[in-house]
Length: 128
Image (tube, rainbow, N blue to C red; front, top):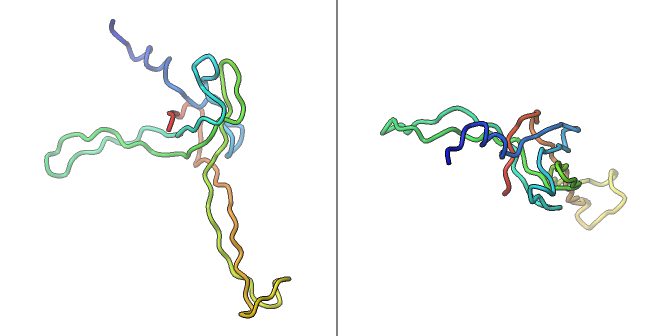
């Protein structure tokens, strides 16, 4: 059986709606076997890359928009939320901290959620 581009496009997972920079709706859900907490990569197809020595095509580069996990699931769609985090380490010196240690400095370790990078309707999505 020959598969056309349209068949491939129908089976691809894509961003159907951008709720905000942290949440996206994808065009597949329970009916396509998507599961709650499943992890996905959001990306677009970039330029074709060529081997510098052989000049042969290496294919197109995936431009990563981010990763996320399914937080809401429906029959034909799912909502994914960014699961990327950044670790922040900062020091607070005397006078700016309520806790003072012998060295007069306190180190705070925090995490910050990172949004998807410029997500758009139609961006490609694949399980990771």
